[in-house]
Length: 218
Image (tube, rainbow, N blue to C red; front, side, top):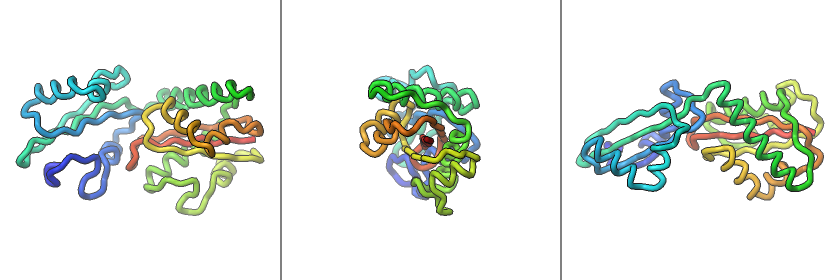
């Protein structure tokens, strides 16, 4: 930012702050960032953050466990602060379970039976999230041409009907499910009566910061 003379989540090399975090070897389930110019000291920086509604919420969010702060001077003083919760097996399981619970709540409101978590669909959904981050793409079709039903079959699933929702950039299960429900095509997958099983994947990183996959089976 100092070299470019402006604030930005991506550097002049096109690498995002989220890609830098995972590139440093830190896997996260959620991350918050403050990119600020102007404050002359750490005390001024914290005062600035506490004075802004969104920044204050991030600073005081009990979900975060780790933090990092850096600054650089180039005419102005530029600050980058990161708060994060590490991605652990338990955190990933809780995140997926919350997505399933919120999805089933929507189905319940529509008078539909709940979806059961399917371990093979989960493997395929998680692999697709990781692949989107690793190969820097966002699509139902992978660069090698594989589609949702191909990935489900590769994971060992024998479900005859397969559907997929993907999303990127959302910070929580509630935000991602809400976004899907406000999109006609994604909503149709969630409320499809023929589906009885679901797998959920999540990976932090990439240009968007978070990548989500729901894989449905019937």
